[in-house]
Image (cartoon, rainbow, N blue to C red; front, side, top):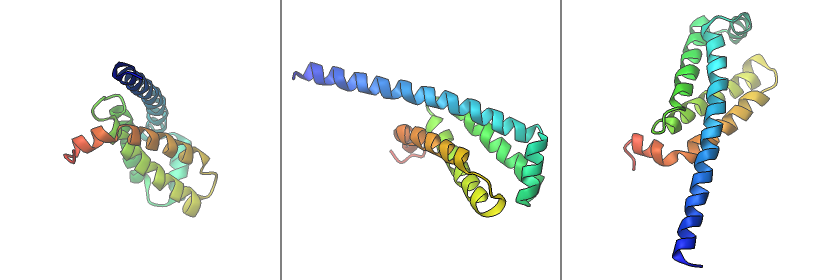
Length: 134
């Protein structure tokens, strides 16, 4: 195999990875903008959920701002990994809340954790660069 063929193969794999990451980022952004927007907008289901959590409605606003703000970062080539890492952390909290506080099925936060983890890992070089570690 020639160097040109290897380089072309690496380019194609890198391009496919980048396209896949962008598709996942856009889907995640849409989901988190809707979820965070419902929290910020005071949807009755969200108000009841945060009443059940028992910390207070201020926490619904904080979570909504984190979700919407981080979702918007998913549209930035430089900051998408940071947004995904923030959302992954939020989903860890959501899973713990489902398991130990409110009950219910944690399948959706687990799926969102997998998606955000995939993007954060795929964009890890940019995350490290933003943090000054690379």
